[in-house]
Image 1 (cartoon, rainbow, N blue to C red):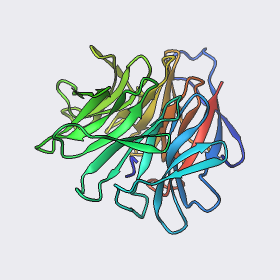
Image 2 (tube, one colour):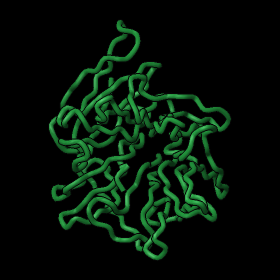
Image 3 (cartoon, rainbow, N blue to C red):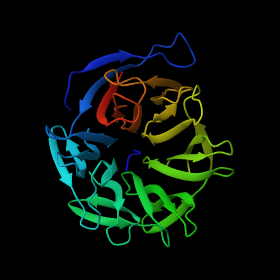
Length: 298
């Protein structure tokens, strides 16, 4: 299931793309670890209270969904899900201000991907009608949910669920859309594959697609993961060497960043709150075991 707060604070400054005279943002990084025995931690989403949603792998190699409020860990499993080892089990991908988390797993009976919302200790299924699997990855304070599904021909589409109504989100001219995140205004973070086989990234307001993505990305391009309620956007991009980096769009300027304790080849940015605190994952080698991070900006 790879899409895949402890530690010494490190400060790193990055230069914005564009206006050279603009003051650069400062990123302050810290590691995110579910608990002392976790062998891997993935931090995917963060709300305005600083509570982080994601997953972790325990000492026996089993993955669990995670809600982490400071050092307080809520470890979550779903009886409907297959128990998975090797960092491929249940996970949360976003969390709203009411601490409702959204995620997905492999359904133990059907073998299909199963989306859900977890709130107050209970799961509510999120499954696009007549689909061959659903992944739920975004939720806002209204309870609207976004993600992707496979149709009866196993073709991928994005979706948004408002109340009980599901709506398909596709990008004209592109394929394999993924409606990854959603903010309170209903702006959806969407990425899809273009005719060249690279990613296009957009913010979709329900009517128009506004293209975003790190401007110096190389094939396969940029993906977008989350937009906060103040207009900042974050995601991941590829460089010409195939290495992976985080990006942040803030105040009309793009910033590229790597966690300074990683290999500078594998940093993925997944979530952002209204204080521009970013969460994601890095590793010490490209494609290696994930280490969660949290980065504040000023």
